[in-house]
Image (cartoon, rainbow, N blue to C red):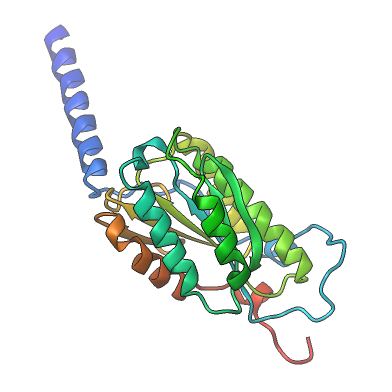
Length: 246
């Protein structure tokens, strides 16, 4: 019986190693074990904060994107190329886009503003960003969502809102990240999109049918991948659609 128990334990370890290897190769995509159906009462109440001076004439066609930029230590060999890609991406956004940016470790880089105004600010701030630290994605996602919520309050809820993440590795805080993603997806109209750099498809933010995810081999493809994802975002009609007479 003792030998049988040992063999079972060895088998469990081998299976776990195999699953881990598949995850690292991007062959297994973790799925959130939660109900991701939108809570329409919460979506309709979003952003749920008051603006000091909400726009008298909100722009229903405005898109506000917050870029979550990976400045973790693992990006040290690619950080300068990633900065260039982020600026190329911003330069090609439609002039009507509002753009904000957050460094995973360095915090707020640019508050949302018209992209033509944001571009020189982003260029200046990115010049000071260094690749250092871990990958605390939960904190960055929460900050990005708060940015969008405040911007939506100014727009009285009209418009399309997106968090666009770049990352080259799993989050340090996967459990907390899962909770944050569930909260964003089910209680707001915010779209979440992710570019996985050199990590394949196996990332907690890759949720088929719930988020947009693009896997790229290296940072050389980052600018075009960012542009593709930003162009293909979706929206929740009850909060973002504008109809005459409403």
